[in-house]
Image 1 (cartoon, rainbow, N blue to C red):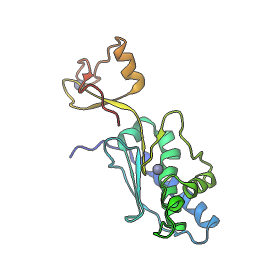
Image 2: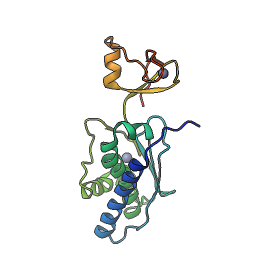
Image 3: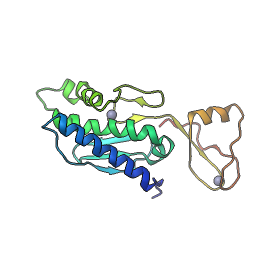
Length: 182
Ligand SMILES: [Zn+2]
Ligand SMILES: [Zn+2]
């Protein structure tokens, strides 16, 4: 299985950020579990990050992390960990659906604000209805690589006639499929 590598330095920064937010949450809410979630850098495809309260786990998309390191460390890490905090403090139950079970509902928003993060979409990420958020990107390929992820800025330039050459094999990168939203 091919997985994009994330440097130790970046991994450490993500984990340190979770730890910082965990300490902040524990101080603010005595009911908060002081337990670091497992952080995996293996999320593929359409999502920047994903949180699972059952597994007490956060998964980060390594491609998007490498492309948007700073924003992913603060925004995505905080976004996903906020799901775990909201779940721990205000667990959804049958009797009280609505706000409690909405992934990006009022309780998640409270946690995000406490973390100093805007619980809304930013210029580069769109908040979806799911537990995760999505970013638009396109799949390209060249002679040496089957899959090259290209962001919308570069994709639009290519559509206007710009040519990008692969830094490894020197061939032109071409759209693999029409366009893949992910
Ligand atoms: Zn979310
Ligand atoms: Zn190449």
